[in-house]
Image 1 (cartoon, rainbow, N blue to C red):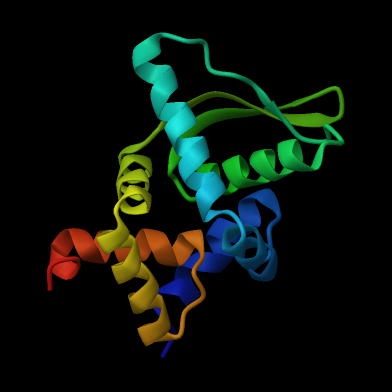
Image 2: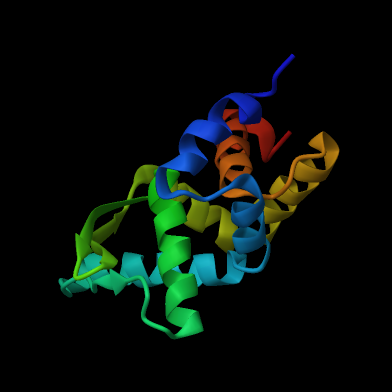
Length: 147
């Protein structure tokens, strides 16, 4: 029997061309970056700041990592954004958090919630990817965090 991840992951991961192995590598080293990036996006909304444009191919490793992470967050429905191609580079503009993005940020800020997600990942033998985290957050909303 296929797991929910087996059914969801190929369709979701393929949109930006990330393989499951690439997504796992990105996410394993970047949940701290994820929280920082989501907080950056969250701060923009009430301040009235114009959302920055994120570009691929900048040649700076940190900028490329940020772009890759933002693209993955977009693919998984954690942020709304406009994706465009400009002068041979991909751009992400007009970024805002979705309801799922706010739930992810809450989980990343809470040691208890994040510990529950990590424990659930180990129990199920699933890698800690955005696909899994999104499913775990949905499960937690139906009572998992306090179970």
